Length: 594
Image 1 (cartoon, rainbow, N blue to C red):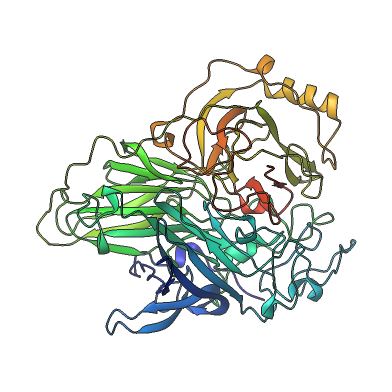
Image 2: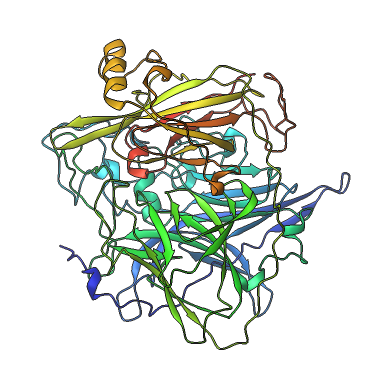
């Protein structure tokens, strides 16, 4: 049996941070229209990678592979890694990606067949007593289904990575939502930091933990901030950084729990996975050597469940310029930054005032689960990575524009939508977490009309903060306000009964239960978002428009301004981005109507 590796035994900052290379597309131009497209072929496969510091065994990972440009020769060469290479997309130029599943072996982590999951073999749900893992259930462990999702993208649902659109190696078996494996991304939205990751129903948490994730950066040549003359750091001074927590065994393999807290209900599923080490860009506790100048860090929380409250050990400030959906209206100076799973923050860090040889730590003090769990061990998961300042002459940062972006507030043109976040408890803790008390398989109840703008009132009746993510759209945070949770929950249960439901529950208006005054979004939430932190005991309001970001204000319901039909295909989903929750009912389908 594998032996857990103690995180205290892993030396920190021995590995240099890896910066993922960029996929090299095949560029085609239509001879008649002159329209350009970028085409890629990307596969998911299993291989070994040096994740732990040198001297430790390599780790078997899953990662994405494709063609990159050899920096020495300029030749088109293959590359695979976890995280995968980065897509560099250009606003207005469509991208086609042929996704290939090359995972031919069994899953290395426990597939829990008691969850509602892809189940390519139609194995069904076993009954207790359950088989321990390993070996688990061979009919569930193989073959491995995957489906890629471009998180934050405005895309047709057939190219969105719907959880039921999974496919196995060779596309021998396909999910009920499968349409195609060659996806088209239109890239008509604002320039921003996106990311791609696996999204297969019921196994997202273990597919992503194995390594199926990567960045996609969308740039706009028409935006001064994206041009070669931009005041923002470029080239080697712009670095995408994905933070993920992991645990390991002494043989280098990932250590993932194989026993659930309610083992007679779900033999392997846990409410949240929290690793005991921190991995950045596929390296455990790396170091980055930096010149004495400003850097642009594209931060992504790619963890299953862990929130991070990031701050520098020397307490130096930094500037946030962007969020999930693009540039903020104004730069925001911060001393700490809370980032939830799935969120992206675009920040500027100035190292020019630091003396050569200075070493600073990017630290974390967020509790797990957030916000009422245990504080992080300052010797392990309380540290993210190290920055070491080199000896070059200092280069002062250029002055930023006072205004970075224009974000017109959305105005609702249809009634509000009230939705609850509800935990279902078992003998030893949660057995599932739900949206509006409904299971994934309940009839679709969110049917927004294209062109409409809705206010979603998210009522968090649980003890955890949940990062709620909506596919297709970028939205705006409106407000947060405390609510009398106990009274609201009691009255909601009285009119609906105890969840989980296979029907749409009756709506209980929130106004009589609200307390205090609403608080507007934080300055660094003033831009576009696709993932919002929904805190316990609060109603979080977001304004959601079913139209492109660049749609004019006042778009009327029934007006389709997308370059595709959003009502076609398998539809979209909204879910908690704590992947362990998403995999166990905290995800719901929704369909856009015309």
